[in-house]
Length: 385
Ligand SMILES: NC(=O)c1ccc[n+]([C@@H]2O[C@H](COP(=O)([O-])OP(=O)(O)OC[C@H]3O[C@@H](n4cnc5c(N)ncnc54)[C@H](O)[C@@H]3O)[C@@H](O)[C@H]2O)c1
Image (cartoon, rainbow, N blue to C red):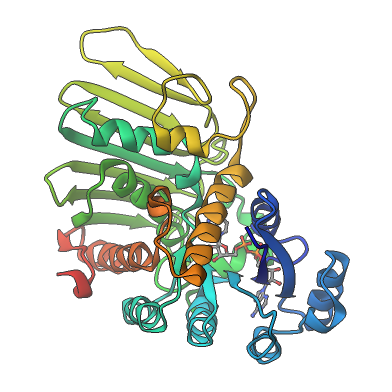
């Protein structure tokens, strides 16, 4: 397969998510990091890009300069990853899609539902891929969990319980740290902080694993640090479109919790539990039998899990490899489009702009519900009602 040119916007030196993207995109030798506007500080971005091996003329000071520099090059970037703070995602993603460049946008995809809807329609019109980085869905055992639910191993799903609770923003003395502050600033983060930052990973995971969409929800938001305008803790009850009951807790003040993304699914004939901090084990409880521990990489897993698993059983796989599975799906999707052929059906699992839109609609529904003392509201995007 021809190596694809890859560009990054954001993900500068010291950023949280930039290194995971660079590791992931490099895993299968499908992408070459060819261009970047990596930092809000143009000089720092240019300097860091060149230290990462990007040629000086493609180490840009900002994304508009990058778009102008790339759009007419014969070797222009095929895919751009947008890993900047939330409020900038929309205009950057839209501009690159309109220039005919595929985009992997960080979550939350946009701030408003109208913007998210516009990106879905822009990607369709441009005939380009707009993916959203719900990267934890790239884990082998998350894909296996989905396959087990889909083939009926636990019967009809009664209940899904999702959590994403960490304690890294609990220190009031650290609230002004620039990497923490933007997440609680409505001008940069949008209408929600913790639910939009972490809760939507858990909510998307609930949909991914059950194969159902969120229909209605009721939310309770709290700002445990009173200086925060936006919430740092949320409890969300929801119902899915085939009747499954959903429970979700997300927090950034849960001291002692590290990453805290877990998903549990309870059906008529069994239960499943997976936790991001122990991603190589999936706990399976068949009704009336003993607890079973499914190991990533063992024999007789689903084709989805085998495809996503990269090292032999007993060796730890982690988050950049999960993200790598998203990049590998995108590489195949882009290559298929360029060759005018149908893509490998196995790539169907990567998260798309439609998933990003569903999350943004759910964020706004949760904000409305929380303001209305937990009233139940429609969580579906207007475009899909
Ligand atoms: N999918 C995931 O698991 C996951 C995890 C963490 C963060 N994220 C998302 O990734 C995005 C970035 O988060 P982070 O934690 O890395 O933030 P961060 O604050 O650690 O880093 C942001 C980076 O973007 C750069 N930047 C800011 N504005 C820019 C601009 N206009 N042009 C170019 N670069 C710019 C900054 O200089 C910095 O390098 C957010 O949308 C966040 O929600 C996703």
